[in-house]
Length: 166
Image (cartoon, rainbow, N blue to C red; front, side):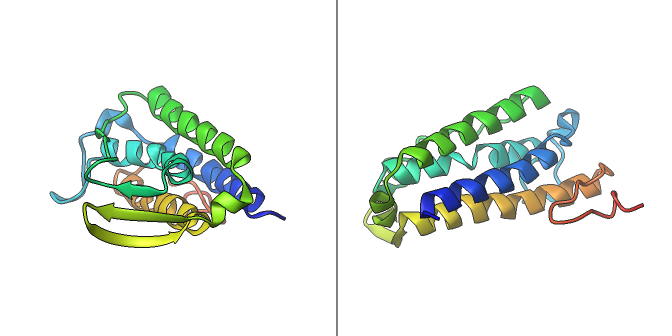
């Protein structure tokens, strides 16, 4: 199995789990946060929905500089439909870009820097796993805690959750 086929399979699997979590987000409570240093529920959920855009960025940008290439403006989805639309749009683009990238291009390095300061250099195939998949799973875990604290039933990820046990 090729690296890109494996990454697409893992991305689809983890995204199906993430979608279950996003479908439960009560955006009528989007300003809620568990601590003053935490993101709001709406921002965290939207961040989770957007994370797969990194697949495309990693594939198309060899040297990513936060001082030049990061034109990101944080947004907060207003509705569940918008949240799931953001998620699906970025996921579809990520899968399309992965489908079209060559195995050789996945071996190329991805450099992340802040101006002259190089933060890290790793092969793109590893960057996709770390910067996208692990990142999504990390924030999905945070989101599950937010849901628990708001008494929203938490969906199981790798087996049933406490809310799904009978």
